[in-house]
Length: 176
Image (tube, rainbow, N blue to C red; front, side):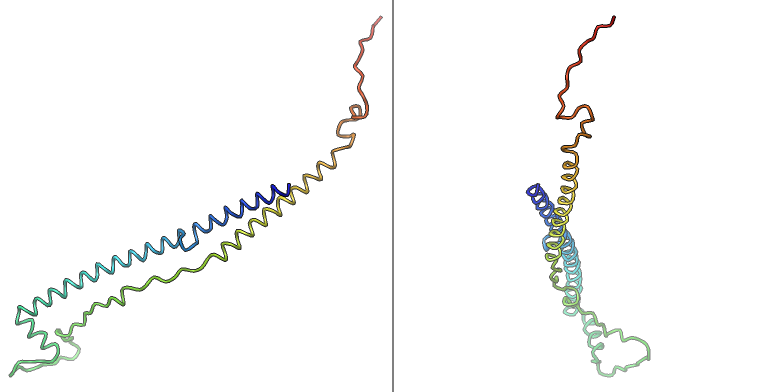
């Protein structure tokens, strides 16, 4: 009886532990989802950096080949040709001053370590095991009381069929 209770409790503890580990551990379902989201973020980051790279390569090629682009870039940093005048309009943005920089540090963040759920998993699994033992012991105690109450009482067998009284077979009687 106690051995069966302990075996059942051990099985319940193991199943609970394995089930919770499957979901909450560092290699479980939640961590898998978190790593997939991080991988998606990295793929989006790579595509953004590739887009910025093609823009910068195009800009470098324009600076090498087109003199007008070089002049506009120079005006953006305050270089003007001789005899050129500058008219500044308040509230109008400077078209040569473009602040587009690719900041991979802003886009890429290292994945952080997940929360450690192992103490909680162990505690819940152990609690389930102890609960199973307690329930089995309570049920076992109630069933043993029922068996003891009914085991030797004549009321169980009826007044005529007591185990102490032997039954005689009925003899046919003659009717006159």
